[in-house]
Length: 159
Image (cartoon, rainbow, N blue to C red; front, side):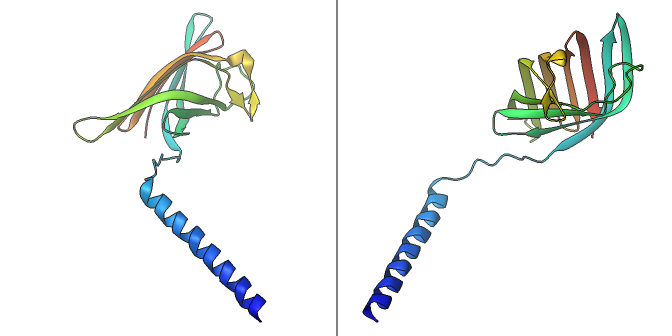
């Protein structure tokens, strides 16, 4: 009986100790929460192909913040040129960004990267390495430019 009481006492004290550590940790270290939700836009994408601008309307593009320094862009179901037999959905991850708030309380996210290999269906697609990525997200709009391989590309969309 004494052993059972001793075992239960040890378990109770251990539980109290772990519980008190958890509570003090959450009070001492406020979390730096990042909104990981995906934000989508509809817009036009322009690709320079063999000296001609090819515009595709109503392309969905979304972004989400990976953490407090990196974001991910997804351009959904695009064709770079009309004769392309299928659509693709390139995902460009680990783009560095900064986020500021203007005097009216609106956020502005500026992002850029020199070169990132996009993924398509979770597979790297080096033939369309995204280079010279620059863009901005402000209020209800997004705009960016980059080169997918040899194809200069720009996008402008709104919520």
